[in-house]
Image (cartoon, rainbow, N blue to C red):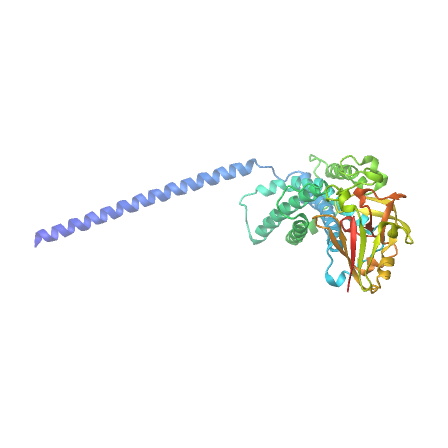
Length: 418
């Protein structure tokens, strides 16, 4: 009996010793982990101490607010004019017949502003990022819910604006090295960008309000001058604008050094986006050309018959979505005369079909407000001469305040939609 008791006591002592040893080892591991965590934190604090601080006027909240106002204005104008362009190209059904055809230069102005402000946003966005970038590396990365929202808004804002500007800039050169459709993606990104801008403004509203007015930040005689920085940013904005805006504002075409299109370049002194060869228009396809008008009273016209009808001349701009535009002297038959001959209702929309093979705009539709405008022509001559093949020979549409992609070339059929 005594032997059994002594044996049980030894077992219990051994178990307690093993348990104590395990606790000691676990405690040692915890100490090691804590030491490693302290070392990592020390390194992070050391790195954070070497990051730039917001001690200068070029990195303070006042400078960020000033540059942000300029960037916000450019983004707002670009967004609104982009909406105008989108809905002129793809109007909702209820608006198709009421889109305004006046002023004749309306789309030239809005699309020119759209491209100009988009390009101007490049130096403004870079300046804004340079002003605030030290804060992007602050530690800890997230301090509160409001701080997390601020970080999220900045990440989405920067990513969407960079992609929006990049794709838009390549669109002006008609280069699309991506697999997704440009217009739909550009439109969707615009909503993401404007949403992130509004979220960022909401999160930073107290800071913006506190530094909106001049004199809200204390003077710092040792810091670089804020006015000089803003002046340099505005100079960069003015430089890129002057180097590109001449493609739509012809008085400045002499400074149009960076734009992909120059007014006056092209057949009949007018630029061309899509040539007849690119559209698959050949002499064989044009042989025996006839204009077919489908309506309550359908009819056909040969080229000779079309050009013998009463014609009208008008000076109208051709304004392309890529940003370039130019006035030209067009002559042709008013579209409403052709519709009246087919006894089309006055509120009818029309579908215009091109000889072009493929292409996103080989078939377009036109609301009654355009179709019945006296300046909307089925043009047969440009600058007093028959249309060049690249400009749509034998006949093309030209209408006021209408995107260039909808000014259908090589028209072969007009259908009345009731």
